[in-house]
Length: 315
Image (cartoon, rainbow, N blue to C red; front, side, top):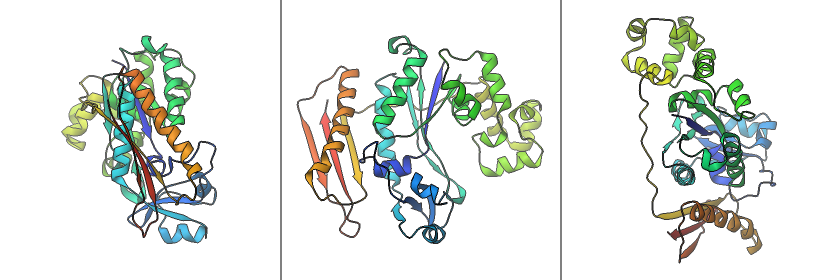
């Protein structure tokens, strides 16, 4: 099997500013949760603001900083829409929501796509990856990708710079030997486990996955527990990596959120076009049609002055 993991590292921010055009540079924005910055715009990053900073420290770096409260529910809805988009390419799609971790950072949400049966219909691996990147860009969603023989391997390799560089140019899937080499070369900190386990690995001098794989499994189990041994087996492909499969709803539902209030109707033209393009892609790929399209303007709570625009349709 061939799995693609698409991670969405900026989804906490992009779920809130996707109504802006691709050529529009966001202002000094920071998404905050529990008094900490969890994501920020490039403009904010250029001023030294980064995830993990306290709100007080971030505000001290820029008087123009605009704070946006993290909206986990909106991120989950956006991930479901991305899963529906992925389903238009392959019937085996598994979304994974973001996990909040320490110091204001968060394991990003991701999609796992099984590609074995859809590459030929989409022009081969290189054309397919380019299409995915292009359409995500049109949706205003940043991403990083990894390719592997299992979802666990693909997720870890999506964080490995050398693998991402290869993936940006390759036209064919890697051989099993290449996968094993990348996995062995990967730093232990890229393993999908909690910070306590990572700290314990480094305390034992295990800084590369190759060092870990060289230890007998019985000894790994006694040190780190049976669930960690099971994870390693899924990582190297010796055990099946079960993932929940996504079942798309019959209803297409997409939404754009405006951090600032709008002052004229022309500002709705770009977001309306973005929503309609997403709907058309879904209808075309799933060979469906609709006789009903419903738009909803939500002016939000008065104290925040935020608004959103939703598009619903039954297919």
